[in-house]
Image (cartoon, rainbow, N blue to C red; front, side, top):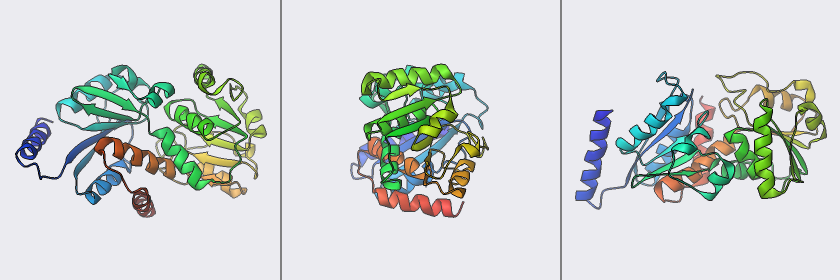
Length: 304
């Protein structure tokens, strides 16, 4: 860690002496079980396309054998080592908030952060998950009816998805979580911004899915580290559209079950790319090329 910090300080000194040197960025991702993340490659490839010196490092608490209590020290260490910013993923998107100095309006409203800028001693939290999901949804399911939608999962990612769906015009959103209190908190928060007529915390997931036009799954179930189905496959029906936030693997057990009976589906790839597009813009101030990032992501997944 000391060597990395020395290297980073040396780079900063060189840039100060040579104003024509390309900008450099050191970015990290804090999360648990993130070795399969495609974020490093997406960010570094886009950075290279802009002529930046761009490094993106994984800070995997599973690999480091650290628990949630290590989050404050990880943030402090990133600052000390000269990181420009951090992405935050499961299970820290909500826990990180108390350790930040500022929040964007979206992050404050959502109560979840996936992007942190480290600037002049400040830690500024943003949320690009919601805009990433919205862009991916509009691209992947442009004709989907959203008069009534069921959201499975009320954590940080679920909050972002809910915000996106209601912003896109969902008529009514049912929120379900195995932790009923968490679903109720999210529904209450959403009702304050979108009206209580448009959102409800539910305890009967099956009945909600039966009435819905679409289902969005926003829990870790289906990831390689958390295999399986988040609900019984026989609760699905052909006219239901099904969207995932999990992208590794792209073809989760839920999507396989949905496609097998003719459901329109949306994998988590679009959200993964478009949240990265928005995070890259925040980290660098430069305008990324979404199509280039989508193409790179597709190439990576084809060879995974």
